[in-house]
Image (cartoon, rainbow, N blue to C red):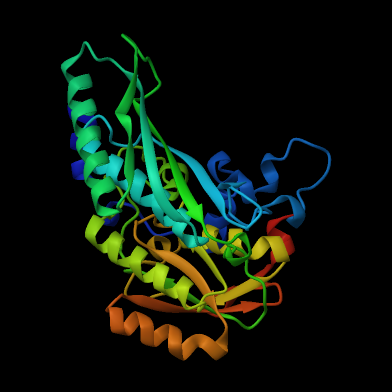
Length: 346
């Protein structure tokens, strides 16, 4: 563990080269099994993946359960995390819970309760106690920040004397409430011409990202940039935007970073996007970094001024990315082709 922690401390983004061709990096990442939800290379059937089968759920992997005939329903999602539990379990747990809450809030549900499960923990080992104690602190702090109830037994354990190559993992289940199913906000882009924004800080960070591990082959790196107070501020702003009906879609920027989040939003309705990146941030970091506390939204042009006014008043950072297209994908005025290129065989 000490050797791994030392490698993580030594890592800086300047130690990896920027890709000479960003399109090559994109298609290299598309064969990553962890990004396979938008990847035709991993379809083992004889039929190409179609837009209908990708990201088709309005809630993007979060389940909904009707409560009664009034339209009220419950939301539930399950998330797992194994990065850094062995050396920073508190922060790792806070990141996992923040990510889960952000994902639920994106489509309009209010997170209510949470339970946690630690898996592959050797409780007879002092490091097992360290992980359990840190995870408990992270769970309690995140629950207090996001006003979540915790199940009676705060963290359940599975005891393993030897977990071999399987790292300690924390799994959480989160419950939320939706007052009216008809008011759910999808992750899908629905209309050409809508403006696309990223809510949150642009950060030069690729720590623990799919890009860093899969493209550069670096498994040991720091956790992604994260500040739980910034996360709370972003999530509170998102609630207000929902209540004022100012956003057409919302997605947490997650696996694969901004670019793959854009793809997940564009593919279902066969739309595209034209974006301009932040010149002050490395291109690979801007497109593929997985820093926390960022949300992708699209906004009707008629509501853009009000959207900007709300975020400005709340002093929440945001970045104007570009707009939804009929199907073409463009990054910094460079065309990467059309959306069908990302979803069908070549």
